Image (tube, rainbow, N blue to C red; front, top):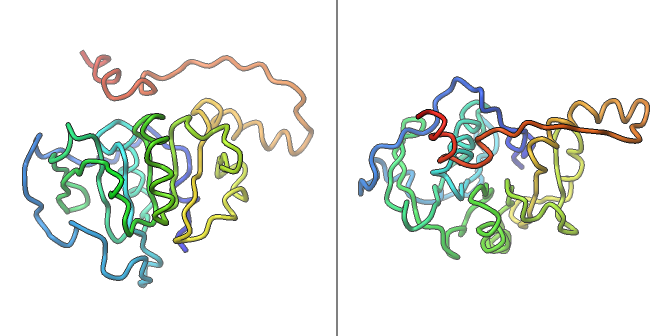
Length: 223
């Protein structure tokens, strides 16, 4: 099945590639119907490999836009993308890789036929809908802190412990959590040292990015 490691790598906010372009606050129609629902042949194999039907919860936020950027940069093979957000954002349209998508309201019915569900809409939303997506058969990659300490949910940094995802099977559901951003970067450096010599103790100081507070904080910096 699809290689989740390609998608689960830590996101780089320094990319020069453009995310989806918002076409307007509430444009009503989708340019091409081929992107308005799941592909007829779910997770079909083509010359480019296996293609997944992806849902992005929180697509209008800073990390949701970064998810789209990473899909493009890593040439992730998808058959369709369902863009999900709050009722307030439903109806907005985004141009992405030559297609026009309409943002849908996130509900219990949002994950039918979805293979991979990417969550970055906050911990409360993840707690409410991640299990729903998993029960529908989607593999959930959650960017919040909601499941980081949950037993049975793998906490994964692909460059450090990709084997933790080994139990995930296509169509069977499941949730993958990722650590705090500072933890990810620190352990990418420390893990090789630990394997070589064994790290007994660390003292870490971090400077947190404004992006951690969301799109509003990033826009405030631009004022």
